[in-house]
Image 1: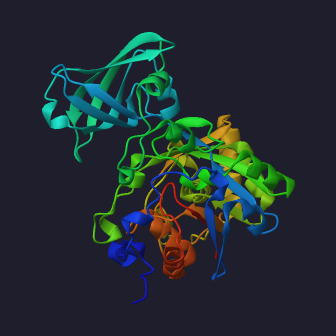
Image 2: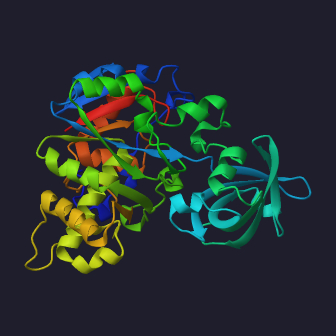
Image 3: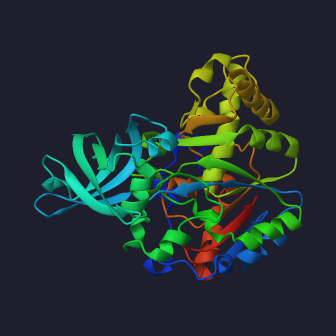
Length: 414
């Protein structure tokens, strides 16, 4: 049966494949660049290793990396009776809603959290003792409200009160490994569940396509004249959420913050029409979100008050007399907005759903790992490759590739 061109009507069960548990990589390889690399170039599949990536890229490529850094967002606190409560910090609520200033907050703050073993936590604070620079410190948490969907608003306070919350998390927290790994984080994960170019704290999941890159590989890209650029999308816990709705019309995409410097916008403009390759689905969603942010500014200059991309924005029909916005015009509109506001970077949020029926505006290829069945990430791959996604995944399963966050990689050039 042909895939519907309207993503609202997509049935998530049509994006199922059987993934045996033993194909999920439980640990990273000792050498990041030793991961295998499946190359799908205009439908032709070949196999190599990731360190050969520079020779597989189209000439004059621009690689776009997501430089977010994973925060140690899992806190294991204790009730006064001694029972443990797990708090998974999802996003800040007060006094800042933006992730980076929230992490610099001192003394106290409020976050939206997932709470593990929370049924026994009726009222009152739970606490966590830790050390910073060999000095004792304490974090207290008190649940303010339970929201629809089971998430909780949690008030945090800590001593010494001069510590920024980022330092509290670094000292007291654990890395939020994907739940399908079914194991606690280790000292190895502290290094390997971060990209070597991670710069801005705020993610609760790694942009895993970038985990394969090493400093040596980045240097080789530069030697070969492959340009690189960076965007920031702070990956939220929604990346792990399965699609529970039967059709995508009933699935709500999570919103994630993006930050893109004016220099990257100018780099994208100067690079056209040469190929832009996204390193990871988060980089790709950021690139395509830039187009929709700019297209909105072209059509509605007053929309600058709230820069956001909604889930179904790309699929809305054009209004009478409205024409498609060229990518160059969208990028120029974003630069004009930055000039007008005296800002150095675009700061926005995106709920963009990329699914079959989507037309790509800024990205021509993707480097990515192999994703879970019936996930929005697999929908994105299908949007890029069309029905060929299934042939690529069948090849990977039949040829021993390792799947998911610590697994192998693919270079997809439709």
